[in-house]
Image 1 (cartoon, rainbow, N blue to C red):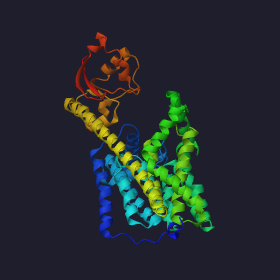
Image 2: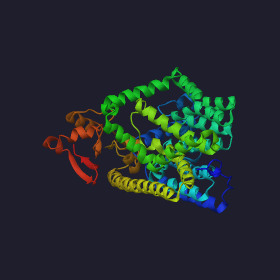
Image 3: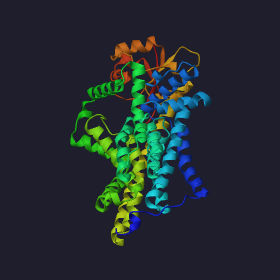
Image 4: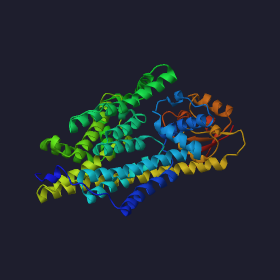
Length: 488
């Protein structure tokens, strides 16, 4: 612990071109392949995709106005993808590839930040490998969502903060602040970090970071006439969500444990343990004596972790999802590498025990996530079976429709979007729902056992002959997905 290299690691030279090429291919190939081969998961990715489509259409049609950027999601990711897809088309693949490229960029930034923190190429490559081949990070890098692009912007900001390029660092988190609201925490963090490290403040840096919420309030005002309307929209969403599922507001030990388990699952138990040890190192030695790289990395990590936990325990975020923790995983890996570097100053036995324990935790995380990844791929294969069945039975140009609430099946089926109907606007009782299917000329019904699907209510009564006679089972999977042909 008395070795000065722990406090101020030597400046490492840049990796050679061959190593950069290997790193880029190792991170990029799995993510790009996943973007093409793995469909979006059900839910939020399709909401992002629909927003991208609407922005693309208005830009291409020359009718775009800033007010169209307003919505439940902050708009930068969707707007960038919409601009690209105006030129190249294929907005779905543009959104997925853009996320995949950002995911590869996160991996490379983990490597370069780790090099700055540890000056050890071996430890930096190990940190890179942990994220480059992480199943959850690869999967979410393939989805059309803002979580991975946001993590890229935060990691880029950290890199430039370490290099004393504060205005560039502020520009990246300002961009992040137009992608996800948690980036607004840097309005206070970045100036505070600059003051702590250099005893000076930059007004330009502060104003750059502040520009993100100011721009968003202008967009809100242009769209709704109220600059703070976004907070009302989000507050209403949370109230409706808690009304539908009161269990989300329950702070029982089991619910809290489940959310913290998700945090550990995605951010990584080794990363969380190493981050706590790194914080202890910094406090024990005095953070003012530590290297700028280690202090900045710890500040970014613990500020992001604190913001997530604060949002959860104040119910501004009803649950912790795995994708929210991807930025913590990326920020924490350089701290993991730094902790292993610092442990070299311990006795060999203690250093070996720590290294073995962290390695075991990393291995456990990979095994569990790999198992879950296999299950996701298997579940997707079942959706492909259902989608193929719908596509083969559907006659192009006919007036028939398909009832389906699963967005993934809709996309995989490859038939026009207006050929589908869903639970939205449909009646809840079985008799009225049968009339609804008949009036909309529904030929196929895709059944998925989910609480909000009107089909679930209908099939509770499927044992009754008056209902059963109207449906013929066409295909069934080992999941809850089934396809029925209607007979009216």
